[in-house]
Length: 334
Ligand SMILES: *[C@@H]1O[C@H](CO)[C@@H](O)[C@H](O)[C@H]1NC(C)=O
Image (cartoon, rainbow, N blue to C red; front, top):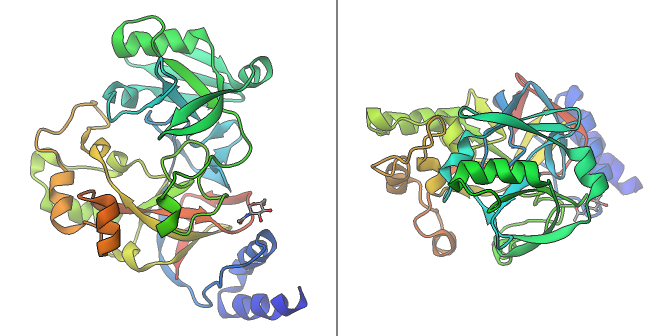
């Protein structure tokens, strides 16, 4: 332990003193620490925090959140801890079911409320879901994941919304304290650890988009195909950087937290569905435009991701869980 102390001391002197706590927290949370950069540069400001309690549904926008290995959290409100499964117990997403984007979840104490413009809202008490159900196994991206069934009321509500059936679909709630298993293959190329994969997100527990990159993309897109951060479903939106500066960062520091950048986010057709209306863009924008200049940079990654272009980056929390992030926090990169 004693030979770690000078590293921490050096680092905290080099960076602004107020940031030292993050290094200490980082040191305490790791067995084999990643070598942390010694100099950080202020690159922008946190503009928006989005938490998506249900995979593929609308976000809850927060001013402050706690960062955990399972992602952003505010009490019972946690990122991507719920999802919809079909009658084969496999997850569904807005890629195939765009109407999911029109479901607006809110969480008050332990009560999740689902709202939709054309339906009466329905409540689910998550504390009761945990207390009254046995865990069961469903699949997400072919991987088994342990969940609780949320009962007949949300099942009926979602099924009615999707195809007017009464039982086709169910809402399920993530039943583990740890991150879910990694998707096979993904960890060969990228530096995932067991603490990076979150509850039910596709890849990592956190992601951020640089608003300047989206602004630049909009200058290239036709006026009837403009996008916003909402098309990309990030947890964090930052302002103040240059477009695509995020390509060169390895670490980010936001509020009390240090994040390592695991990989770019390679985008799918979900970005082409208007988050306000749920309609698909007829020109397949913004994917068509992004493919012209944002495909994977290396040959190996191109093999893995084909014609999925990059927008936003995926992050792993490497400082001690429980740190706060707040809107207007300065963001430092290295
Ligand atoms: C994951 O988190 C646990 C709990 O904080 C910690 O003990 C463990 O060392 C972490 N594992 C990795 C690989 O970082």
